[in-house]
Length: 259
Ligand SMILES: [Zn+2]
Image 1: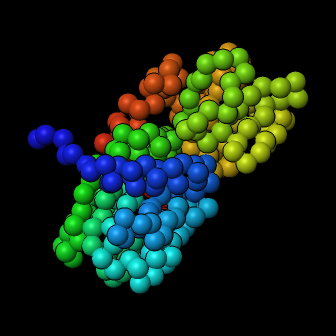
Image 2 (image 1 turned 120 degrees about the horizontal axis):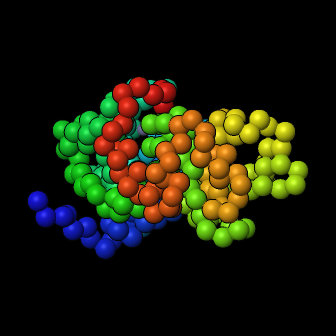
């Protein structure tokens, strides 16, 4: 089947939704970082991300912001809307109830409780659904989330340079210092000195992080690479991240936390 061609307008709004989602990386576990934009007559009437801590979902927040303007509008979202009752009602139902005419989604949600069910519910209710705009970027954005769901610990990404700057596309950078390991996040630094070295990755998971960068030349790399749950294939090159994310989308585990 030939690849679907998405309009330049769809791609533009989806990139905007991805930019929104990017801002919430590392802050929304146990949910994925999702961005949502509602557009009517070529104007954004609402935009939202998954809330810090994972709830409410991005679609729910954007619909609340749009109010009556959602009727007949197009909703852009970086991941398939949920269709199951977790700790919040299904977003697919809220989208239908709000009168959204068209949903453009980047990727299907591989969670077995969704996995196409959100799209089916929308289509069965008369909503036009288009899937695949900026799909590669969305998989990349959620690579840490998919990795953590599968392996239980954050994804470790090796970056070049002895003192690598905070890299784009990851939740945090870990660096050695004389006092001990320090974690540099988008919202400041966290001192991890005094921690058992082999508990570092688990501790970073407890902080809600899904992807950690470490310099190729930092001795911490060896400590992290020997941690349980780390896929050594992803440690050789940051370019391995994309293939890892794609594989994880196809092999989502059956059980996970309620979201
Ligand atoms: Zn939802």
